[in-house]
Length: 483
Ligand SMILES: [Zn+2]
Image 1 (tube, rainbow, N blue to C red):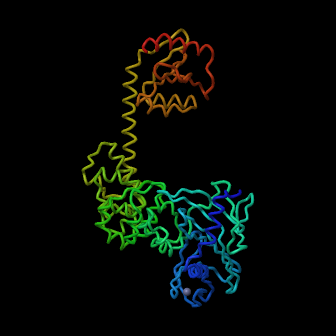
Image 2 (tube, protein in one colour):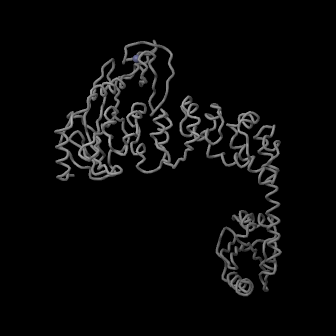
Image 3 (cartoon, rainbow, N blue to C red):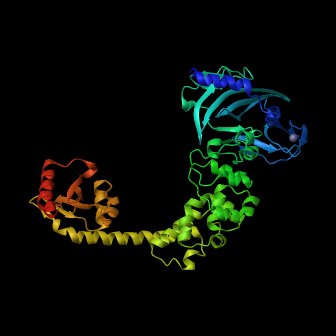
């Protein structure tokens, strides 16, 4: 799509007046270096960045690739075996400029082709721009791309035809924009954001430590963050800040607690989950934090309600991590069984927790059945006057859970699940039967608010006209008289 004249002029002025920032080529070289591989052969590893050999090294997987850290140049590089003949890597990065009231994101792409052995070929270009009006926030005016981008029905790809190209076109559909996650060129940022709302935002330090991140999150454009990321970055808590801006939920942090414990948080590089866990349980035990942080949402409420001592639970109930679900369930069941939840022997059972869980669960089923049976019986006493008959049929309310189970097995339907609903007063179940065969199931009737809402026969077939008439009469004569 063609660019509006004002924007076209703006881009032309920009291209005339704005030079590449001073460390552009150094930055580019760094990216090229990061595209070097560590080649693995039967002799060990060879770092193609610093031409050194080394053996044994731990391999880490990230973004679906295998990385090792070269012990000599200390770089994290992708490792490939010497059987790999071709490989390519691409990095997109962004240079932000502040120009005539606009914040302009210049998008660059760097692609390196590797060919065995030792051959690296790198292309790079500027392919797009995001033009924002700087008001009190960043307001996207337009996203544009140039002749380095080939736009087809299947999507866009970068051709690296020109280093730079000034033939800008607007992206027709915002859904197909370039997004907000790039590597960020850090060296000019302090200057760019001078005299703006973000002049103390520290993004220049953050960009040096975190490879790729979403700047919308960083600037809190969507207002998800309850804490300024800059506060974390000022304190060099880059990992925590990064996990915070990658989170799409509103996270509240107790700033006072954070400040008080910042040494511990820094020392262990806590991410946001780990920090929140630490803040909640206030245990300076890094092993516990690492083990349990990910389950925070599952068990916090139960543990707090019952004042469970996590360290004690961890120590005494072996392998609580693996058995956490059983343990939580165990506690909930004990609560339902109305046990004394202040009794330490109940809170920390000195037995295998899985067995203990199964034991109380069996008790609970019996307990629950008793409770349901009692409710069904009480309900029966309340509505037994609704029993009605004519010369052929009789209809009467269900009296017990076993009657329900019997009915459902005769009818091949699912009335069994109605037990709880009757017990909770959601509905009533009646059995309609032939006077001549009162033990044999015929029609199961569900009643809500004195109205028949469902009638089922065997295999859920329709009732006959005669049966229907009987039910209507019953509803009118008996049920409605009460309503
Ligand atoms: Zn190296």
